[in-house]
Image: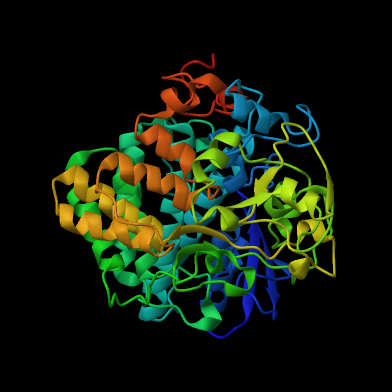
Length: 502
């Protein structure tokens, strides 16, 4: 495929809006026209537009409110507070920070709608691919694999956020919309595994520069390994370790390697670098300026959220003061070489002459990895909506540490586990330490701080109550968000509320 960029928005029922443009980023387009779904998907160009409509949903962060995954999960963890102007600024974030969500308070509506929109789009495209008669075998194999990966991606978020959710793998008839019962996490995970296993052989080993943002075989293997690890079943750890080894080994076919300089991972000018395995692209090329539908653009509004409010000084642009770093994380990292690339020391900036407003839960420490930088502020559209800061969901140091964990939990090679742990530490000049699970978990917090992993790591390792209990986390309840109230009402109780939220 050439460097033409395609995207579409698809209704749950029968109408599809098709977008085409010729900008620089793969997942970017502007409106062009409409077509009835039944008359569409007749050739590879049209099918590809539908596939990119599925990719498009991975970028969404403002469905049903502001629900950008990385800062939201950081606020739920012990890495950050919710922040903002006051406790009423983003009450859904504050409720997740304090674990006092209920059926109508919390980020659940946006996260539910985003992921089921992605799943619906995937199901529509899979049904069209299956019926298409003009697709080449190679094209059909690849787009089928990509779409199955994406369906698995959306279900992985749903099962971690909600637990019991409806399992939908086909296009629903109107009469079926309100009769979908919930499946257990085990059933959801089984479908995720199935989709990923079927996707892997159909994906390319590497992605060309013109197609950065599409899924590779390495990304699918990393995602499957992560899915196996998160099920917390030691019987699955050997397979997880094997998948990660294929990605982590020296000379791996995917071209992955640790960057020598830790800070370079997060430089917006260094997108899709050698350490990035699964990256959600964002761009300011759409010049979006519609506050009523921010998802229609390509920018990362999460970057605007985490910046210092009304900042005036060097390097950074002004933000909105969300997700101030906790003093707990500051104290854990204060002597770590990764501190400077992870955390902005606001007090030091003030001492150098900068100013900003101290907002709710202010600690004078802020997220650095996804901070708004003056050099990348958009000059067109509404700058706050158009930050070109990508989200790196899986990177190589993450898979090193996941493999080390899987090896230790499966009784695999302790020597290899130590090599992997030591490699992550050596990259930033830290000495070797014993390869124990506690050391691996501690390293994950330091290496991946504010990247959206910490909350789920605490839940899956059984440490959430000990670490987050003082914030309000309750065992048997806070592991999951409440099911959106509307889903329970429109299904007349077919969909049941999660425990503790009735």
